[in-house]
Amino acid sequence: MSIIAVQGCVISTDLPDYKTTLPKVADQWSSHEKSHVNKNAVVAVSQTWFTPDFHQQVSKFIVEGISNNPELKSARARLEQQIAQYDVSESALFPSIDLSGDASRTKSSSKGLNGERIKNYENSFKAEARISWEIDVWGRLEAESQASYSILLQRQSDVEFAELSVATRIVLQWIELIALEQQLDIARQEKSNLIEVVERTQDRYQQGIGSILDLRLVETDLANADATLTSKVNERSQAIRKLELILGRYPSGKIKGAKEFPKIVTDFSAGIPSDLLVNRPDLLIAEQKIIAAHHNLNASEANRLPRLSLTQSTSYQNRKLSDIFDPYSLVASIAGNIIQPIYDGGQRRAVIAQNKAIKNETIAEYVNTALKAFDEVENHLGNEIYLKKQEEELSRAALMAEQGQNLSREKYYSGLIPILDLLQAQQRFFVSKSRLINIQKQRLLSRVNLYLALGGRNTPLQKSVLSDPELADPELADPELAEDNRNL
Image 1 (cartoon, helix red, strand yellow):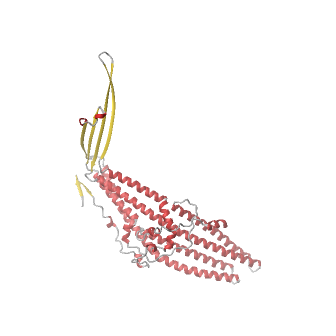
Image 2 (cartoon, helix red, strand yellow):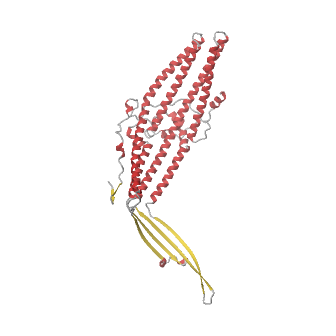
Image 3 (spheres, helix red, strand yellow):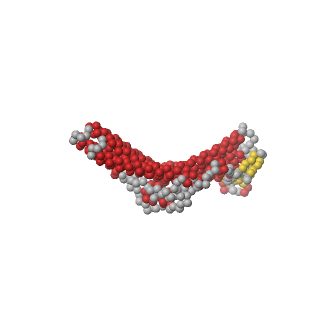
């Protein structure tokens, strides 16, 4: 342990053992025992989360987003600012050298013996070099430099987290867009079915075997289906524009979404809980905040101790510019300066107390961030179990609802059941299909969020989707969008 003790002040350079404040970290994720996730699996990088065809769909978008996203550009600019700020703090450790020059001409006049006025001119030329250096006896300047370096590492982790966030947001939005495309297909199918039912009901009414009430019921459902279709088209347009904003594009709504959800690879490795402490950018940022607070505390403690500085000056002064560097014109001096704070009304003591509290706060924040990180991963791993089970149950429900709808249509057309039974069967079928799409979407989104929660290190999504430079650009034109707008 490195300690400096002067006048009762003790400055420790050892970092606090902040990781001991964490609760006992489990050896493996608790959800591992319940899920089908193989913690020992070795899976190809391109197949870690989804099948390769999905990576090909989003790869160019991720490249574009990481290059053009405005939030990412801001994070990179903040990193550049901190690099410059760190250079400023580092420069305080070295001597400062200044060169200066001075030239003057003095005019004077006197009265001669015969009473005439005599003018006198005197020139003066001076060149001076000054060196000043504060000797960092107690490590105050070094502590300030280290604190600045910790902030630099925070900004670097900010950029890494922003890149990871942009990549996952693009994938999340792409999955959202696929879900909306499928919901839109359901709305079209529902409208098409109702148009057929309206035509059949009109025929039955005209033949006198149906009632006007039946006709009005199916016409009402058709109008509602039109409104739903209009709403879904608008939702899809908004989702496209949201994706374009993440990419840094003008929100023109011209990206074409895919039709099918990606397939989930179930055999993957989530690592162990302790991996999060070195993988998650937000935890690395919280860690560097503790380190910066520690160095700031050391700097404030050293600020109460004497400061020692040296100043050396060398100058040449002569009346003639050509003789300015004549050795006889040399004037040199060296001076030492020591400052010992005596009384400041308790200001320095208060700053130390403040920095101690800041350090304690950053340690508490680190623990809180770590616990939230563990909770996020456990929740998403749990979703791997429960959302999959829900998807299986809703798949069976959608299949049975489809069979029920088909039987109801046949019986209604044969006059065996009233129109309400058919409409209820159709509504049950489309609701089941819509719920199935939503749960499939939630399962995919949870998988992407699990990747984000793990810090993007265990299974590098960015590397896998960016590994093929020959991937074609995604299609931008969407003819179906224009067709939907015309049909509204």
